[in-house]
Image 1 (cartoon, one colour):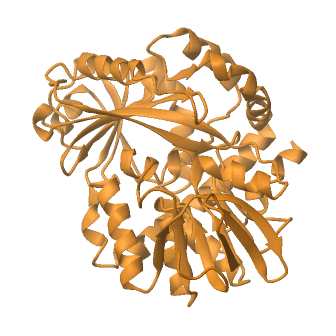
Image 2 (cartoon, helix red, strand yellow; image 1 turned 90 degrees about the vertical axis):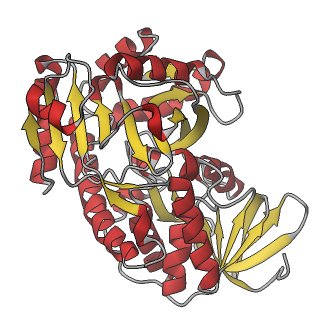
Length: 419
């Protein structure tokens, strides 16, 4: 890096959340540098399903969830697994997860997520006005599929909550399912369809295009591995793994699942963990896919991308250091083949990424107490892409000492001390 001292705003992390934070800081008139240890869109910002899941307002830790989790764990094709070598480390995280499922905490989380999603919709409309980014945002529609009428009815309360929040959709039966997406197994007779199913046609290229637009607008992107942070009177000191030091007035920690380590360097313990997600991207000729498909009873999605079809989902808890277990991808492909009999499963590219997840399904968007000019923006779980623009707006407002566009009280990094 050329400038070791006197930087204005430094964003740590070149994923979608970090790039969006940089975008809004630039719009606020700040001089912005992004520090990324590999390259823009090197992690989950490249391998996600590309869905802008604005209606997903219902927190995962809901009343009764603790009875479902053991069933999932016993199913080898189930949506949840825990690596044995990592299980002991998860006890505190699942304790907070369980507490977050209490009715009052769940309802508070639902309210917070609803407000954040309203802002997310508005801010992505703002992003779409940039002609450099608009072509990546497409509308394919979303088809949520259920195995049985029983599971469909069990999901009805969640759909009621989404409707109350202002999202539009309607129930479809077998004949409509076949029209909306030919080639599905006849087992699917119950589904929900939304014709407002936005997605990003190529998540990796979108994030890279965002990074290029930032440079065109005056931001600097530097390859650097950050090892720690230190508060100073004028802002914060950033320690790099090569021994160099950078000082900045404002620092944004937006490096996903790795953010926990930087917060720890400031003495702040945050119950952030990682949900490892697996997917396989198939050639576009693998199946005549017309729209996003979500197989609700099995917690995986199939999405049409610009250059292929992505089959992904499920959750594996295993931290950042254990090797990938691509048997998870293989299992998802077996399910996809069962539900889409004509799917050609050869020629796919497997991927594993780290979703930075908080126990209550809500992100951290907050100011460090140890270093008030260090801002936190991480922990979005499955919704990093969806909430990235909203997070960028809120981070810029914090940096500029403006009233936030959403209530941040329940997005504090230390909120679990009260649960």
